Image 1 (spheres, helix red, strand yellow):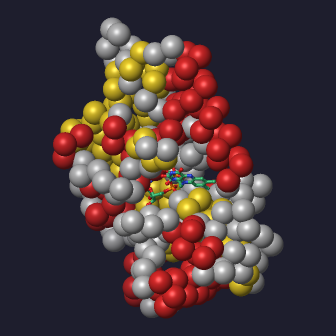
Image 2 (image 1 turned 120 degrees about the vertical axis):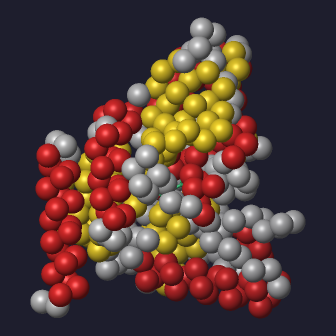
Length: 311
Ligand SMILES: Cc1cc2nc3c(=O)[nH]c(=O)nc-3n(C[C@H](O)[C@H](O)[C@H](O)COP(=O)(O)OP(=O)(O)OC[C@H]3O[C@@H](n4cnc5c(N)ncnc54)[C@H](O)[C@@H]3O)c2cc1C
């Protein structure tokens, strides 16, 4: 073994040791396909399930100091993970990151842990007659991933409801960033360009009639079901919406609907989605993405930029 490999292994062992002392569950060689909606990806060298801010801060800063690659995975619904896996630490937020609580008397200002799913958050909002999150009903992510990506749909986006985000910086310090400093724009936030792990998000919602909220949620969900290939594993829309166009329409107009490479296919139902039709590899999807980008640029002059993130 070379000195570099030796150092890496020793450093990794000390991170695992520290994580276990903080009562975190550590699993070595954990298949990441289990944690992505694409059902694609090799093994994480180690996956650490972390259930409190103190442990997260220690493990994250340790990885940074020891130069061990690391990232936090939400619901893996916007990720394409390499077939070779990830030679580092993948952090998954557990228990304490799954709480939702009102933080003012009106109940419209809520704090939500980064590990809460958007589904749970939307149900909480509905149960409490709070409006503002209807657009997120059906987005299969966590609150941390949605804030990171500024997830949005049907003219709504996280930016419209977020008041502030609490996060851990690479040196382990905890910070709260107000909405005006989050640089949120289309599928982008300050976290897309900088390191940092979101621990909770504070959101301002509006009281509204419960039936109206439910109707809007049902309407959005029905539109998703009718247009999106939800019966297959995918990571949602592969490409960002190019200015003045729709990616799905461009791809369809280029005759690419149904195109397959290996087990990956341009969805017949929605050309903006690539589906894992039959045991697709990451390479199948990457090749298909390249084929789509090249064809669309050649035929229309429009460059398609990936929305999904590569690991
Ligand atoms: C069927 C389907 C439909 C979809 N529809 C939509 C849609 O309508 N609109 C939309 O915007 N997206 C949509 N998506 C994409 C995806 O669900 C969103 O981008 C979602 O917000 C990603 O959240 P996640 O928790 O799954 O993040 P992941 O995919 O796990 O991670 C995405 C990125 O966020 C980072 N991240 C995750 N959690 C944290 C955290 N706590 N702190 C810091 N960084 C973090 C990860 O490191 C990664 O870089 C869809 C996906 C699918 C499969």
